[in-house]
Amino acid sequence: MNILVTGGAGYIGSHTCLELLNVGHEIVVIDNLSNGNFEALKRISELTKKDFRFYQEDLLDKTTLEKIFSENNIDAVIHFAGLKSVDESIKIPLHYYHNNITGTLVLCQTMKKYDVKKMIFSSSANVYGVPKNVPITEDSPLAPINPYGRTKLIIEEILRDLYVSDNSWGIVLLRYFNPIGAHESGRIGEDPSDIPNNLMPYITQVAVGKRDKLKVFGKDYNTHDGTGVRDYIHVVDLAKGHLKALEMVTSTTGIDAFNLGTGIGYSVLDLIKNYENTTSQKIPYTLTHRRPGDIDKCYADVNKANKKLGWKATKNLEDMCKDSWRWQKNNPNGYEG
Image (cartoon, rainbow, N blue to C red):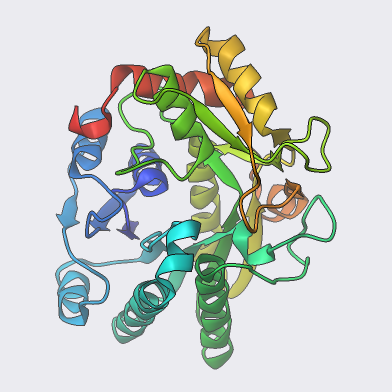
């Protein structure tokens, strides 16, 4: 199959492109490189020994998007493209709503015009907001608490309405928990353009000497050690979840949502200790105040993905730490190095 991957030069997109090529699919990538890096795409070609088309363009540009669909025989779309910082979305909400939602509308309109009705959408556990119970099932209440999460939920609702209007569509909504890790080659990984928003790249930058110490936000949560508990999933496991979702959408119609996580909650201190034990790198840290909107515990019930997609995470926390360190050690300045 020929898969259009929007946002394919980003962290999760690049790992998914690699897995798609490894199992024999062809890909076309569109990315404006605001969160991605062209070097990641070059390394995907090197690792797979396969070439593919890349368009450095924006989904908001309808003319360009139509050009891509007219020049390529697209069978399905995996839609990663979008702004992704929770903190930034609170500061510039209109930019997030316009970019993420309008970009998706333009994409769906173009897909409809070219009769491409198979989509996998990159959603987020942010759609659940503050969970009343853990583990979180797909039927848990949807009540995001920040603009980023709300853009994901609005897009989910748009896609549900799209299916109701035309039930020849096949759509899978994948709600990610906390992706970390990197490809085992050490050639592609997470490369934040500024101060990392996520925990693992901050830890690895401390380990490699780019930053002095880690700030742990919150020490009085209702957890076993007082720090927040999250469901960390290896990015390669996450990428392989998209392959399973692709199998589903190509063989059926309908729309359904799936949690992608491990189903295990680890605290911030658990992650730091595991990283130190796995890599022999000391991570100095200080405990500081909570951040607004952060919650005690958030981890997934993954039974639905296990049963309906035939997917299960196989990599453990040690794998995530080891692969994150290999990536950062080999690329101390990220792709720019």
